[in-house]
Amino acid sequence: MAAIASRPIEPSWQRPVLVNELESGGPRPPIPRGPLSDTVLSMFQTPPGSFGARAPVAGVDALADDDLQLALYCCYELSYRGLAGVDPDWEWDPGLLVFRADLERTLLRRLCDEIGPVERYRPAEVGDALVQLVAGASGPSLSRYLLESGTVDQLVEFCIHRSAYQLKEADPHTFAIPRLAGEAKAAMVEIQTDEYGSGCAAEMHSSLFGATLTALGLDPAYGAYLDRLPAATLATVNLASMFGLHRRWRGALVGHLAVFEMTSVEPMARYSRALGRFGVGASGRRFYDVHVAADARHGVIALERTVAGLVETEPHLGADLLFGAAALMLVEDGFARNLLDAWSTGCSSLLPQGLDVDGSGRGPERAGGVASEVGPDTQTAGLPLGWI
Amino acid sequence: MLDGSPTPDLALSKLGDPVRPLRPQPSIPKEEQLMSAKDKAKNKSQQVAGKVKEAAGRATGNQSLERKGKRDQASGDLKQAGEKVKDAVRTSGSDGR
Image (cartoon, rainbow over all chains, first blue to last red; front, side, top):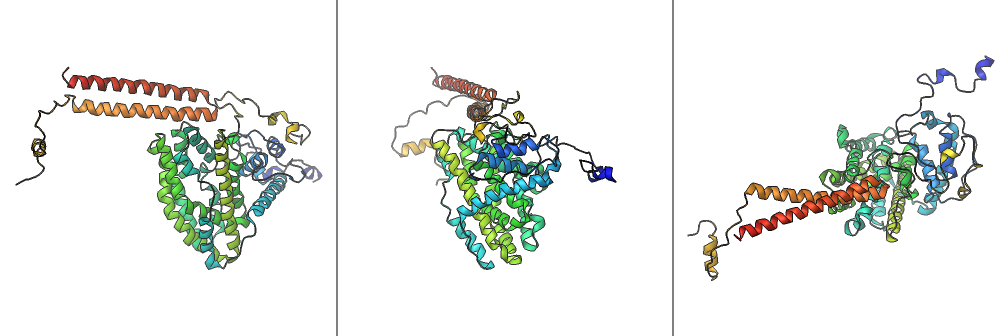
């Protein structure tokens, strides 16, 4: 008995299938951008169970910090496609979950600071409040800019940014389905069925976006451009993942979906026309054209059935729902501003090239070095000074 | 009683214009005209696709894609110029010079 109790790794009956199987698929892990993402990515090179206590995250702007957003993205990716070479058991590793919760708290505090207190409404008024919130949006219009004055380089960059979310389109919201009931659940399934191409893989919206990337000469592989995506872009994905992976945030996830569906018709039409300006053909524009038709319907379903259904069965979730909607608008505003600010100064909105995309291995290092230089047991001591 | 549209000659004389013999129509077979339009569209789209490819290559640091985009544009430009030459030859031919 003593011998069994002292075994360092869990007994084999807890891992009945393929002990220590590593992910062979999934995107390759990104290059760390600082101490937080380095902590996560270094740990991923070791067996689960080795994640020790860490100092709390402090002093970072969670919405703008490339390092924090990448660390959170990597934690969440374990619940989607995984990362190549990383043990899938990391997904539920208690040490990693403690660290992830710290990152999430930092992000949530930042969102709350920006959004402020959310007013409470009676269930019947939540839909109207949501419509008012959407109508009050004042951010810059990226689609209008790209249609009216964007260059072909900017359009390509825009699609690279959007690959983060649109190659996993619908996936974060699917996590809501088992957590909803009645009308809200049925309506959510109806929307998601369309998003997943009504059972046809080539028609899934994520596949259609892959066709857009292909039409532009870009790589449609999931996660291909992760190293180029700044915090403001990763935040758009992480927000949906955070709401999706926590049942506690199901109200926010419904609000997030509703705003997405309610606001996409006009921008999607403009993006399609912007692509047309540069001669992109029908297959490359189809992702956007399909959304123009689909979201005109989805917006109504989301508002009148998913939102109304949720607040009817769980009236206490109205405030969360509006918080999720406001949070989406905030990160989308940040996303648009980040791109437009870079372009207005004649710069690229993508992070500098970190990897050699011609496939000849790792390219020039960013300031700060790469993860492989940091030993798996090194927490901060081996990190370049620029990160601390 | 008119039954349908007036003939062009009748319309012209009604407006008081001197009736001139119409310039002979270019004798390019319809099929060739269609091919020419198709070629032009194809060349144009090659130029445009080249531009997009070049931008994609530039954004992703993929130099071979960027070069390919430039080549496609240059090749589209050349073919487009070729189509223009063909058009010029056809026009002068139709004038009977």
